[in-house]
Image (cartoon, rainbow, N blue to C red; front, side, top):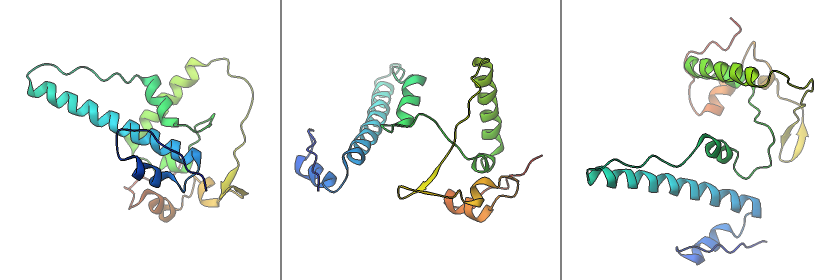
Length: 161
């Protein structure tokens, strides 16, 4: 079992214990998430302090590039893949903003290469057939989507207009 020592100002023994049963990638991923969470907390506290002192709080240093980079985390993902059926289950406002961003994407890359990507579905590291609920965007399995969502979905029709 791997143990990764983490150097911090906190309780070193508890941090080592926290990560001793995790892979190196899992431990690093958790540390990055922990760091980003603490950065957000620090920025919020700095803003509250500045407001309490009656001065304007500095704008956060996070750029769009940084936010997108951190969204991928430490994964080696080269693509952001979002199933269509799940995008259509999102609120209408989100779908409109996503369509606008995709239009902007296509306009920015007018000479896109004529290549395709192939998606393989995996569970526990093994390739499995794509579940029908995931590819059937014309007749979505609302129960499955609600389960993944963690609650009932609003009245999104999820069907082609």
